[in-house]
Length: 289
Image (tube, rainbow, N blue to C red; front, side, top):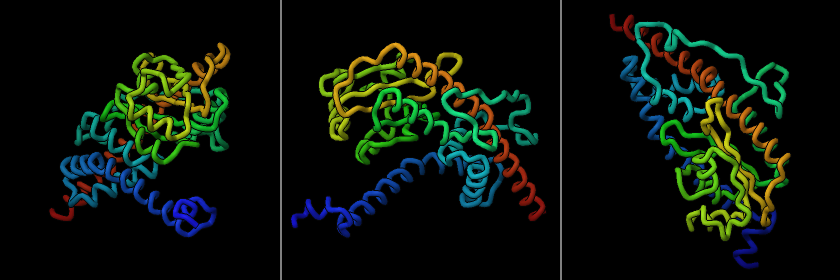
């Protein structure tokens, strides 16, 4: 049996080991990408609340992240981009007005009456794939720090694709164009469409995608806050008016929900983090007083 056959045979130990190592490398890359942002957040917490060290700051981030089901990177990004609170006050956002959770016509609430951010993004992806008629796609959200688009959910795409497009800026892809124009974009033939840079085109074709359709997730102010893209393994004809309308409605509903989540759940997580920091500072003050 050749080396290639060893890597493709089902149940082959060598193939399983290669897959395991690739997964470890992807996890390490993800940690490396997130590390500078989380380290910056730790430093801010240390300075702001006179914490003993980085480990103590990380523990506070983790507690808030877990309590509100918010990714650590998302929480760190919110922390470093939000004006600091008045540390003498209990609340970080004392004048905040709480809004009701927006309806999502493509996704019912769960039995507990709420929806997690991950579940909503998953439903956005599933709905888009069903409308376009494919099983490959991804959801991105606007990165608070970098301003580009960062992948948060995906299915049917290769690991190499995810690594390449984990973060995209304002040029060189159909999703970047859709975000810039705040409009749906159909690429009927990836191989010949000028929207892509050559490295991006090669990465998409290598993943088995020959066409794609991108839908912006928009706020009530008409801003792009995320993107969902469906990839197809064959050239794609223009979508019909009912399909485009259904995707437009979904994009508007999902975008408004993401804004609500940022202004409600994420701010709740920051408020909790502020309360934890104040409590730790008071505890240290009593210990040294």
